[in-house]
Length: 177
Ligand SMILES: Nc1ncnc2c1ncn2[C@@H]1O[C@H](COP(=O)(O)OP(=O)(O)O)[C@@H](O)[C@H]1O
Ligand SMILES: [Mg+2]
Image 1 (tube, protein in one colour):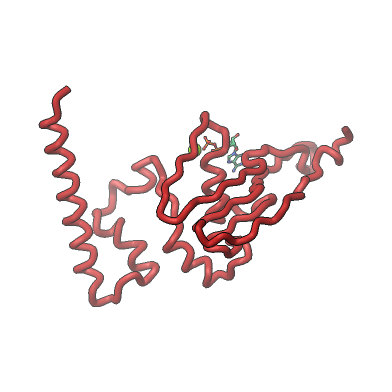
Image 2 (image 1 turned 120 degrees about the vertical axis):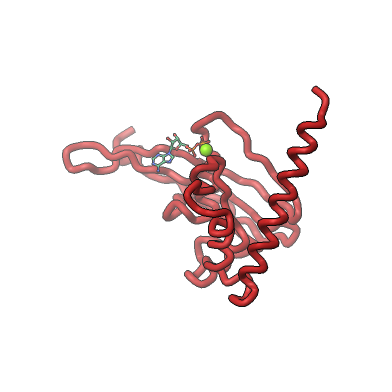
């Protein structure tokens, strides 16, 4: 195969129709990262991080994506959330709407509904910021509660988290090995 043939991206897929039982429909999703090479740094190949992923997520249900390190789980998540530039191919329908066709305004609204929580606690929860600041940032950024209610809202969220943590702690100390 010539180098040019090698760089062709096959984006043929049968489009999926909206099915209201699903909150998220991912169809033939692809995300390739170009590999640069040569004197003038052109694309010589791709890392096919996500190469044709299809699944439907039912409303109110939970799904796990499992696989060895480097198999593309994070890239799939980031691509679904449109956090990684353009997708290479396929569809991402959230409530039947193509995420990659959404306007800036629609994307802002989507960000309150679909989010990534990163596994590494130090990248999610800055040890330099008070808890109220961390959980308050998204609430303030997306105007989730009116300004006047902001402090009460954050306080109640904090108290809830603490009592939940205490519960877990108590269970832990009482549990038998
Ligand atoms: N920004 C990027 N540029 C180039 N390659 C990347 C990038 N992000 C991820 N990759 C590659 O894509 C593949 C999948 O990575 P990743 O989605 O992080 O896997 P996982 O989360 O399952 O461990 C890996 O080979 C990784 O090196
Ligand atoms: Mg990962």
